[in-house]
Length: 153
Image (cartoon, rainbow, N blue to C red; front, side, top):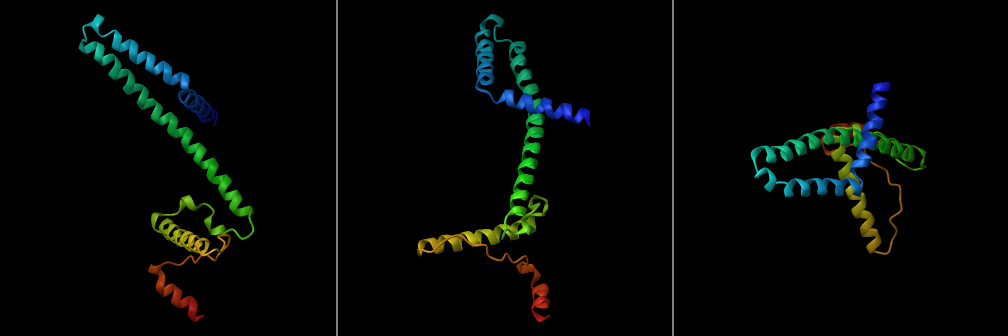
Protein backbone atom coordinates (compact mmCIF):
# COMPACT_ATOMS: atom_id res chain seq x y z
CA UNK A 1 0.00 0.00 0.00
CA UNK A 2 2.89 2.38 0.62
CA UNK A 3 3.98 2.01 -3.01
CA UNK A 4 0.49 2.92 -4.19
CA UNK A 5 0.33 5.81 -1.73
CA UNK A 6 3.72 7.06 -2.92
CA UNK A 7 2.63 6.90 -6.57
CA UNK A 8 -0.66 8.65 -5.81
CA UNK A 9 1.10 11.51 -4.05
CA UNK A 10 3.73 11.73 -6.77
CA UNK A 11 1.20 11.73 -9.62
CA UNK A 12 -1.04 14.27 -7.89
CA UNK A 13 1.89 16.59 -7.19
CA UNK A 14 3.30 16.31 -10.70
CA UNK A 15 -0.12 16.76 -12.31
CA UNK A 16 -0.73 19.85 -10.20
CA UNK A 17 2.67 21.27 -11.07
CA UNK A 18 2.21 20.50 -14.77
CA UNK A 19 -1.04 22.49 -14.81
CA UNK A 20 0.47 25.71 -13.51
CA UNK A 21 1.09 28.69 -15.83
CA UNK A 22 4.77 28.75 -14.84
CA UNK A 23 5.21 25.22 -16.18
CA UNK A 24 3.71 26.29 -19.49
CA UNK A 25 6.04 29.29 -19.64
CA UNK A 26 9.05 27.05 -18.94
CA UNK A 27 7.97 24.69 -21.74
CA UNK A 28 7.59 27.61 -24.18
CA UNK A 29 11.01 28.98 -23.19
CA UNK A 30 12.61 25.56 -23.76
CA UNK A 31 11.03 25.30 -27.22
CA UNK A 32 12.15 28.85 -28.10
CA UNK A 33 15.70 28.14 -26.89
CA UNK A 34 15.70 24.93 -28.89
CA UNK A 35 14.49 26.82 -31.98
CA UNK A 36 17.06 29.58 -31.57
CA UNK A 37 19.83 27.00 -31.19
CA UNK A 38 18.99 25.50 -34.58
CA UNK A 39 21.50 27.57 -36.58
CA UNK A 40 24.29 26.68 -34.11
CA UNK A 41 23.68 23.00 -34.79
CA UNK A 42 22.96 23.57 -38.51
CA UNK A 43 19.43 22.24 -38.01
CA UNK A 44 20.93 18.74 -37.90
CA UNK A 45 19.06 15.50 -37.45
CA UNK A 46 20.43 15.25 -33.91
CA UNK A 47 19.13 18.75 -33.13
CA UNK A 48 15.65 17.70 -34.32
CA UNK A 49 15.88 14.37 -32.51
CA UNK A 50 16.46 16.16 -29.18
CA UNK A 51 13.09 17.92 -29.25
CA UNK A 52 11.23 14.96 -30.76
CA UNK A 53 12.56 12.50 -28.19
CA UNK A 54 12.11 14.89 -25.26
CA UNK A 55 8.51 15.73 -26.07
CA UNK A 56 7.62 12.10 -26.78
CA UNK A 57 9.00 10.90 -23.45
CA UNK A 58 7.38 13.69 -21.46
CA UNK A 59 4.02 13.19 -23.19
CA UNK A 60 4.13 9.42 -22.72
CA UNK A 61 4.84 9.67 -18.98
CA UNK A 62 2.40 12.53 -18.36
CA UNK A 63 -0.48 10.58 -19.89
CA UNK A 64 -0.19 7.92 -17.19
CA UNK A 65 0.36 10.35 -14.34
CA UNK A 66 -2.56 12.56 -15.31
CA UNK A 67 -4.80 9.54 -15.92
CA UNK A 68 -4.00 8.23 -12.44
CA UNK A 69 -4.95 11.56 -10.90
CA UNK A 70 -8.08 11.81 -13.04
CA UNK A 71 -9.20 8.28 -12.07
CA UNK A 72 -8.91 9.07 -8.36
CA UNK A 73 -10.69 12.43 -8.76
CA UNK A 74 -13.51 10.79 -10.69
CA UNK A 75 -13.89 7.99 -8.13
CA UNK A 76 -14.02 10.51 -5.29
CA UNK A 77 -16.62 12.60 -7.14
CA UNK A 78 -18.76 9.52 -7.79
CA UNK A 79 -18.68 8.62 -4.10
CA UNK A 80 -19.74 12.16 -3.17
CA UNK A 81 -22.58 12.08 -5.70
CA UNK A 82 -23.68 8.67 -4.43
CA UNK A 83 -23.78 10.06 -0.90
CA UNK A 84 -25.91 13.03 -2.01
CA UNK A 85 -28.35 10.70 -3.76
CA UNK A 86 -28.46 8.39 -0.74
CA UNK A 87 -29.03 11.23 1.72
CA UNK A 88 -31.80 13.09 -0.16
CA UNK A 89 -35.44 12.24 0.48
CA UNK A 90 -37.17 11.44 -2.77
CA UNK A 91 -33.92 10.67 -4.59
CA UNK A 92 -33.79 7.46 -6.57
CA UNK A 93 -31.33 5.10 -4.92
CA UNK A 94 -31.25 3.08 -8.14
CA UNK A 95 -28.95 5.83 -9.41
CA UNK A 96 -26.28 4.93 -6.86
CA UNK A 97 -23.17 3.45 -8.46
CA UNK A 98 -24.61 4.16 -11.90
CA UNK A 99 -21.14 4.29 -13.49
CA UNK A 100 -20.90 0.51 -13.02
CA UNK A 101 -23.84 -0.25 -15.33
CA UNK A 102 -23.40 -1.49 -18.88
CA UNK A 103 -24.10 0.77 -21.87
CA UNK A 104 -27.61 -0.62 -22.45
CA UNK A 105 -28.72 0.11 -18.89
CA UNK A 106 -27.05 3.53 -18.90
CA UNK A 107 -28.85 4.30 -22.15
CA UNK A 108 -32.19 3.42 -20.54
CA UNK A 109 -31.56 5.80 -17.65
CA UNK A 110 -30.24 8.52 -19.98
CA UNK A 111 -33.31 8.22 -22.23
CA UNK A 112 -35.68 8.48 -19.26
CA UNK A 113 -33.88 11.51 -17.82
CA UNK A 114 -33.85 13.22 -21.21
CA UNK A 115 -37.60 12.62 -21.34
CA UNK A 116 -38.02 14.05 -17.83
CA UNK A 117 -35.95 17.10 -18.80
CA UNK A 118 -38.08 17.71 -21.88
CA UNK A 119 -41.27 17.38 -19.82
CA UNK A 120 -39.89 19.86 -17.25
CA UNK A 121 -38.95 22.36 -19.97
CA UNK A 122 -42.42 22.02 -21.42
CA UNK A 123 -43.94 22.68 -17.99
CA UNK A 124 -41.75 25.77 -17.58
CA UNK A 125 -42.82 27.10 -20.98
CA UNK A 126 -46.44 26.72 -19.86
CA UNK A 127 -45.74 28.61 -16.62
CA UNK A 128 -45.45 25.52 -14.43
CA UNK A 129 -42.59 24.36 -12.27
CA UNK A 130 -39.75 21.97 -12.94
CA UNK A 131 -39.34 20.66 -9.40
CA UNK A 132 -40.58 17.14 -8.96
CA UNK A 133 -39.43 13.67 -8.02
CA UNK A 134 -41.23 11.48 -10.54
CA UNK A 135 -41.16 7.71 -10.43
CA UNK A 136 -38.39 6.27 -12.58
CA UNK A 137 -39.60 3.15 -14.34
CA UNK A 138 -36.67 0.75 -14.42
CA UNK A 139 -38.14 -1.38 -17.19
CA UNK A 140 -37.24 -0.81 -20.81
CA UNK A 141 -38.82 -1.47 -24.17
CA UNK A 142 -36.93 -4.76 -24.53
CA UNK A 143 -38.52 -6.07 -21.32
CA UNK A 144 -42.17 -6.06 -22.47
CA UNK A 145 -42.70 -9.63 -21.26
CA UNK A 146 -41.50 -8.68 -17.79
CA UNK A 147 -43.85 -5.67 -17.75
CA UNK A 148 -46.81 -7.83 -18.74
CA UNK A 149 -46.01 -10.27 -15.93
CA UNK A 150 -45.81 -7.41 -13.42
CA UNK A 151 -49.16 -5.99 -14.56
CA UNK A 152 -50.99 -9.32 -14.34
CA UNK A 153 -49.92 -10.14 -10.76
